[in-house]
Image (cartoon, rainbow, N blue to C red; front, side, top):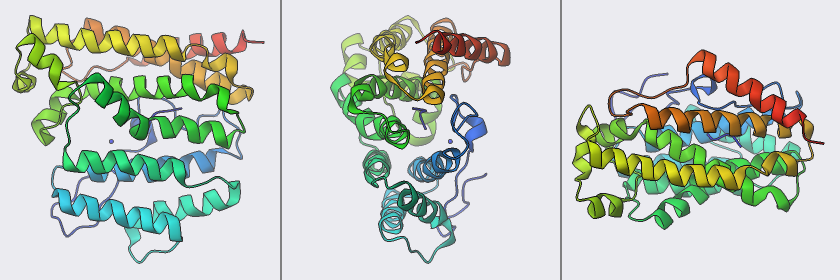
Amino acid sequence: MAEFNIAPPDTGNAEPAARKDSSGENFPVASRLLPKRLRPHVMAYYKFVRLADDIADDPDLEPELKLSHLDALERALMKGEAHSAYLQPALDLHASLRLTGLPDTHARQVLQAFRRDAKNTPCRTWSDLMLYCRYSAAPVGRYLLALHGEGHKAVGPSDALCAALQILNHLQDCREDWVDLGRCYIPRIWFEQSKVSVERLVERSSNEQLRAILDRTLDQVDALLERAAPLPSMVKHRGLRLESAVILSLARALSRRLRRQDPLARRVRLSATARVMATVQGIAAGLSIR
């Protein structure tokens, strides 16, 4: 339910490596709220997804090489064997899935989204973005639900939460994504309707029209968070319930901050104080559920 960016290679001949670890994420990954016995499995899933995501986002790799690396990750995950050191996260996740008895579906689905990223396929409409999130974000929540033995009831709210987290991350990185990768996740049709060029994302400040597009995106994010609001009450496992409540609280706080600050000027982040406050509020909300 967390939604799931060490230096990029200098050449296409270097083996890929993750460029960020869990400490750099907006939202908690395998926090102490989750049972100790399950945290290594969550981290195995996270490290696989993190590596695949960073391969797809590497500005120094050509699309064909990105796709080749992603295919190699999938083969290693399915077979449990590989000959390249960079594929170790796939082998670790393969071993984890054998221990937990979970299928590899949730990991293989995210690869579909990352292949789309490698090809730089734009999202033209909101429906396109939601379909992208179904593969790039929802499998993370679905994996966590399955790992904790939760039923199907919580899947809808979990999908909504994961989509909201994904889009919040995209809004934070909207300028960097466009400058480095020529990639924009905000629906292109919204730019056309507002008569704003997507090239406006290279600027260091948003004009009135672009600010309206960003706020329109945040309106949709807030609607997703409303759909996700019942999630903690649907989760039976106490630790996962608390973590989902904390993530909801952090997401709401980040959405509010993105409305007040301009992601083109600088990457919008929650301060340490704001993170602590949102975390405490989330834990309190989760504990109030009976």
